[in-house]
Amino acid sequence: MMNLRSIMAVSSWNDNGQKQFVHDPKILYRSDFFPGLGWMLARSTWDELSPKWPKAYWDDWLRLKENHKGRQFIRPEVCRTYNFGEHGSSLGQFFKQYLEPIKLNDVLVDWKSMNLSYLMEDKYIKHFADIVQKAKPIRGSDLVLKARNIGSDVRIQYNDQPDFEYIAGQFGIFEEWKDGVPRTAYKGIVVFRYHIPQRIFLIGPDSLKQLRVNDS
Image (cartoon, rainbow, N blue to C red; front, side, top):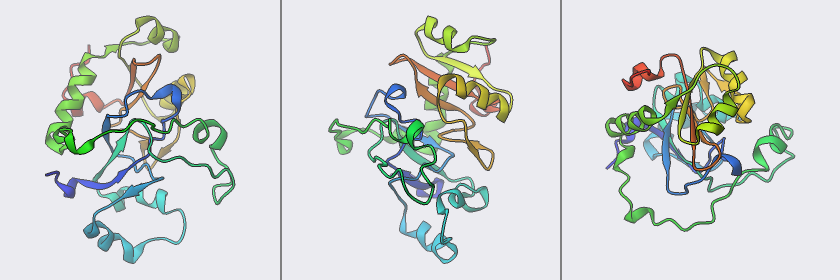
């Protein structure tokens, strides 16, 4: 059974879930970023948060370190929810670029028959590190072209938030951060598909050290 103390919520949403960035409906990830848009949490977590729950912008409120307190989130690669509301409190922010092109899952997955133990906190960091270790590092300019020519999983290191935003903009994924965390990130790493089934890992300056992955 998963240790709920390390999990804040489980979401059915991937911020980088646009059809060109996803492939496998059976894959789940841990993330340090609250995805929102279709989620659930344990009763004990609700009891903790509900007395101070804000009247508006509760999604960004949950993304504050003072509220999630280092707890993580489970998210899918392929979204199970779809946001059709171009008009609302966010005034259509990101709708055309990120929300309308979302790939909504159409494959039946029997989760009960699957072994999801890799999502347990102690196992997941090794599971994710093994995947990152196998990705080929690329550096320099023309990163999109280099990634396309390699054709296998690649990792690209960014130095800081402006550097991340520049690289993310080249590929077309979300550039936004909240309270120091990029959308969908785990240990500062953002993963998405590119020229499916290839994966791109955008790696933070301290991410490989946290995963104990050799930087080569």
